[in-house]
Image (cartoon, rainbow over the protein chains, first blue to last red):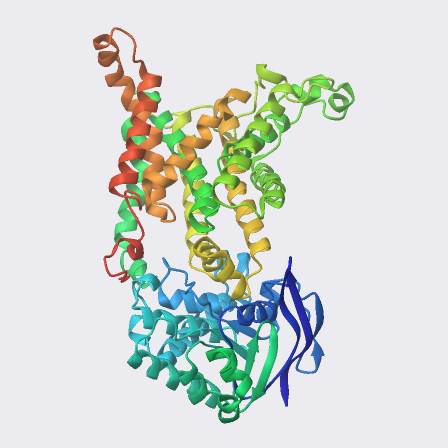
Length: 253
Length: 361
């Protein structure tokens, strides 16, 4: 079943056609890779999906329904969560609070609940604390729950960002270059984590430069070049595709 | 939270000390209790601004505008000015307007909150310096309004201000007269001090509970990274408006209390310098941390009074060139610069910000 379907999407920035008639379909329960050389339009497409930009033309369909986000927080409400290429945590807040902020849209205590400390408030806070601790354990940084987010190591910050995104209960988890700047052992931990997330029934969209990581992880890969889709297939086929090789290594002639 | 529950004996002692403080100071002269009472009002203002600046990270340099809104609201609703100016109103209220405190507090909070949201709307997309400039302008606009709203219809009585404002009264007990119990006389300022202290305690509880809630965490997320906060599903527009409105409501209540306490309001009480003082209190004490904000407010509110005792000597030494007002600004400037250089988190930062490894207790 297709979770997110993108058809004939175009986006132009002034004189630059960043995306031209891009179509792609992300199946539920899969890890979908999005690769391409620098400037291919990966991040533009990612920002269209997550509501940072709006498309000039084209259709988005999320779970069979037309999807046209008006603002970024609505994207999250409709079930798409993202991480950022350059980590954007709430640095002065604890890891636990970062994840609890992620639960914002799935909790509802208001100002009066907070001031009167109603029964509802206490029940919800208790639940939030448990859920946040569970998510920190899930990504493997449970022991740092009360540490300030920007005091964590680089790899742990990446994992905290994933835990925070998972807290919004996304159907689609969009990861923007999660392995950027990681060493080999951190990459292995990340690979296990992403596989575990898929194992728990979530769909992952992965933008990545590291072709080896993408090929090992993804069920399907879409390759962008110059704002067009030049290949979409399983990793083995994509790696053999002459157009992909040409886009990455240049033509042989 | 758990830590607070175990420290209740400390709180009890602190509360008793705060309640008994004016009785001890009363003997030295009513002037000292008056300083304490005014310090409480500044704490109230600083707590309100802390919601906007400390939690939501929106630098507001026009906070005194909400103080003015509250003060003028009470002044108009509890002085003879309106009934004397408008004959028809005077006929409907032959005894004059005398709004009771139970109505004043929610009205001042509500009106200031509306003013806060109105300021918030046009500045939603602004950040940092630009936001500071617009809010600074807003503060000045309110003051200029108060100064000029006497033509064609005399509403604020212009620069002459409004006088003969009712003192507060609780259950028929007027706070303007000393309370005599047997042989013991409790001064009027002491009664005001207790009223303001009660409001401060109430406000601290509200602030603490907001800080440790879903709402407070959303504000702090906006302060740390607005785009990431949006990506977490936070409606940042509504949350910012809420911060402006909540913060302003504290300022409005403080303003109404100020008007009753002084019995007189005029535009010059609400100058830019006051706004800057309130920001300085929040920053000096420890931005976003309640004990720090209270400490900063008390310190800066008491500073001019302390200076009164040493300024004379310095004035003589410099041949009259440096007087108390200049000295006060000089010392505040020095204090702010030293804080920025030596303790950018303020005198009493939050536990998480203070610890080297970012570990909370």
